Length: 486
Image (cartoon, rainbow, N blue to C red; front, side, top):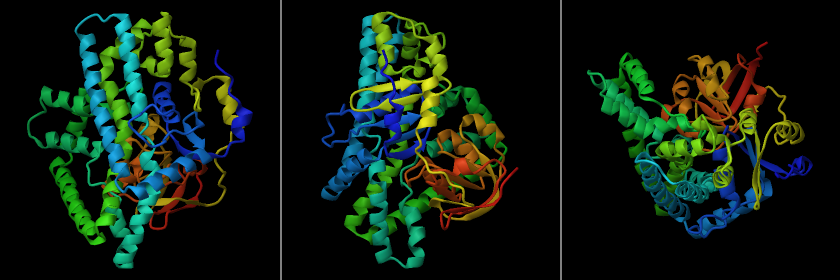
């Protein structure tokens, strides 16, 4: 029997708000159970922390837990400047192991019947590997502010003060190509060709990048038809020019980054390399979680069938340990509980248990736990991700379900952005997010697209409404509300 959620106790905790991000129970469990316990023995750093709460997408952790581990991470980086680089290399190595395992498992299922005992063993191994991978989730977040501030101090010391922000924009943009930009380059290269794309080209796009749609880990992937429509649209709009601009900007950025890094000296250059890798890794670490599911589609389809699920994607509304228990006990999944979780859920993880709650408990928790201060002013403050100014009307895009309402030339406001937001980000006059940090997706992509962007406002989505007229001053990190709609 599931232990009751102690809402009164949780309401008294001082929370550090991380972000709002819709995730499935399966995905959320892998992330936060993996962080509350030290599953990854290859990491000799005490990364685990207690008391994580995911409240209908709002993610938070007990502040003293986070600060304690963050302080230890900064101290370790000071002692060993390559600490983060060494750590992410462990993550890259582990991911290769997971990919090899997942493909082999999927092939085994594709070849014919698989014994249930073996399936359970393989499923548990996949979960164990994923929990080890979750250990890396917070390392870039622990260190981003320290890295940025340390580099900024040296930039201020060496360069002209009028050049500081321009140089920081270069140094806080990774020299490595993000998966989103890599996908766009590949699609544009096909669109540039006069002939229609071949079946092989479609299949390769789906294989290499179809997982970008699966950022909730809900089993949805881009199809060949999705890419065909996108390529046909690009063919109408000078894809050769767009591709040339991307490549030119990449080359220019790399040249500038090398020049600035050289001027900063060897000690700071290590920090610049670390920050660049951290920015790339911030997206990579979660992307690989939901990319690797693509390699397991046949395996998960069989697994879902064994626990009575007609829709394979419903397996992501269960936690991995629930799936394992159902398989071992030869029981069908609770369809009523699955449907209830589709409306939202609470996850609480301490160093003993990671538990999902839904239904009335979700409502009680949302009413009883306050984690953000209200803002009634005409001004919203955040951090500049990419400088510039823009005045226009706001559109709140809180999930992919809102994409259809977005119109070119409006200001995009969201909790955070993910790879599937990129098409509407390109059409945005400016971008405002609740989530913060120079490593965040919105920050990285706004710099790639050179669109004014303010991140880390914490409450823009609470204060602003569709149609509000605002000025985004991304020079100062301020959003001024001129006219409230309705």
